[in-house]
Structures are given as C-alpha cells and as structure tokens.
Length: 397
Ligand code: BGC
Image (cartoon, rainbow, N blue to C red; front, side):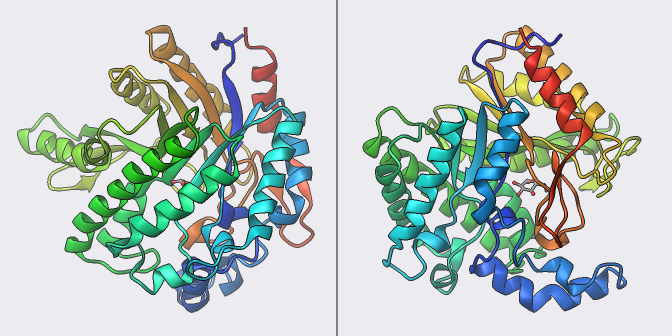
C-alpha cells in the first residue's frame, strides 16, 4: 500500500513529434539528412529508417484508443504536447483544423476522466521559424508567445500548461555538444539560448494567465542529481558547477513565473574535475543510463524549499524486455513518498512514456513505453510493468 495524497494525478507523458506521425518541422528535415550518418555510426546495427520519425506511433489518428488504454490502467491525467508546426505551418497562417484536432484530444481525455497537462513546445520548430534561426533568434519569444496566447484562448478548458519542455536539454545537446538538430555547437549560442528561452517562458506565462486567470503554468524542468566523485575540492567545484548550469540557472532566469514545478528526472552524475562523469552504473537502462531512484528524493527536497506544488512530469526507463521497469517505478515511488512524508508538496506522477516512441537522435530502438508498439502493424500491447503501476494506483489511500 502506497500512501499518496488524495487527488494525486497519475498518468503518463508523450510529445507530439515522438508519437503523432507525419509531422513536418525542423526535426523531420534533420532526420532525413542525418539518418544515413546515424545508421553508419551505429555500425549498421540500426537501419536509416530507425532514425526517421515518419508515421511514429500514428497517435495522431489513434489517440482515442491510446487514451482508452491509459484509462484502463487507471490514469487520471495525461501529458501531451501541441505541435506548433501543425497549428502554424506558415508564418502567421494558422490552421484551425489542427486546433480543432487538439480540442478533440482534450475532449477525449476529459471524457475518460483524465486531466490534460499541455506542453506548448516539446523541441520541434516550424520550418519558417527554423529559417529565422530557431531558438537562437531574438524573434523566437515573440512568435512563440503569439502561438501560446492563441492556444490558451482557443483551449480555455486546459488548466495545466507547460510552456517549454526541458530547455536545458536542447541547450546542452543542440548547442553545447552539437549532436541534435540543428547541430550548431557554439558556446555563445549556449548563453544566448538560455536567455531567449527564459524570455519565451516568462512572456508565455504572462499571456496564458491573461487568457485564462485560472491556469497553472510551469515548464518541464529536467534536473540532474549531481554529486562530486570524491571529496576533493576540485571535484566538489566541478559538481557544483554542473548543478548550477543544469539545475539552477534557468530557474534563476525565470524568477517567480512558475505556479508549480514540473520535475523531470532521469540522471544522477558523479562528477570528477573538470566535467568527467564517473558513474558506477550498477543498474542501467538499455541506453546505458544509470538508474538511481534515490536522486529524485534529493531533487524533490531541494525544490520543496520553494513551497510550490510539484508535479513529476517525466520519469522513465528504456527497457525493451520490461525487466527493470517495475522495480524502477516502485523504487522511484518509494523515494517520492519519503519526500512527501517529509513535507514536500508533490501532487502528481507522469511516467515517460505511455507508448514506445521516437527517441530523437536515437530513433525508435529505445523502448520507454508502458505500452509496447509494433511499428509495422501499429498494434499496442500493455506491458507487465504498466499493470504493476496500475495496481499501485488502485491501492493508494
Ligand atoms: C524528453 C523526452 C525524451 C525522454 C527520454 C526527456 O528528456 O522530454 O522527449 O524522450 O527524456 O530521453
């Protein structure tokens, strides 16, 4: 028996580009250009098609069936994102059929008793915005905010809005390491994009509230639990440095423009000077990401100091054989419960992800889903671990 607070939100998360299929945006173009290279770099292990989102999970057409599954698992909330490139395929030209589509998505959730958590930017950019420089363009906030405002006006029955998903993941992977679309490694862009995205969030926060005073607005914040590899001064410095850039700086730039915190937790890094990650990886996922449930507790305790509600809007594991997921979920929930017992105001848990989906530059091979997807037939199969989570939810006090 897990003692979670009453009215706790339980669900799973997805993002448009990773599940919908047939999106046309900066990523879909990047995939076409880079699939042959990525396949080659895998030593031929994965064919180029692995790296092309294409039909993805065809969730755009099958969202009702997918929500039926979520409902059957006892979920009372669901997080998804709106694909900006669908709603505004050309600058200033809005496609009202697509807005209607998202209205239907929200209606389908409500009909099944699930609270929608809606993300406005889960990394993909319309081609016209990409051509202006994407998130490195000073114009980005203005265009993004216009889109955010339109969505908040047109979808008035959405209460929980998430402006941006994990800004620091994009900053790190696209501009610091240069491995994600648009692969523009440049240290000046790193600082620039921090500022631009923080600005976009702050302004979006304001316009969403203007459209809907009852809205609750936050952003998907990936946080890394950092520890120094040793007790040396240099390792401590290196760990604090990482903590600042990964966890603190964006929060600082966005000030008080959060009605809640949306914590997304995947990583624990033991850091040696200057920035070497020296994890033991005693327990790891198919992507060789260390599984370290205790980290979520420490991050929750830290966020708890701000005295705002916290929703865990992503936490999940790539595990094709479903051999780790049950224990992964169980141990994370135990650490979350400990934080709650110590007074941290946690109000929801969204597993990443409802379905297996398109995992960015890794393509389709990592399997994060509570539900397995056969990409040839599009058949869905509920995994054993999904049923475990569902038993937990039905037994909460
Ligand atoms: C992202 C998802 C991604 C997941 C697993 C999160 O950082 O928001 O889009 O699929 O992690 O890598």
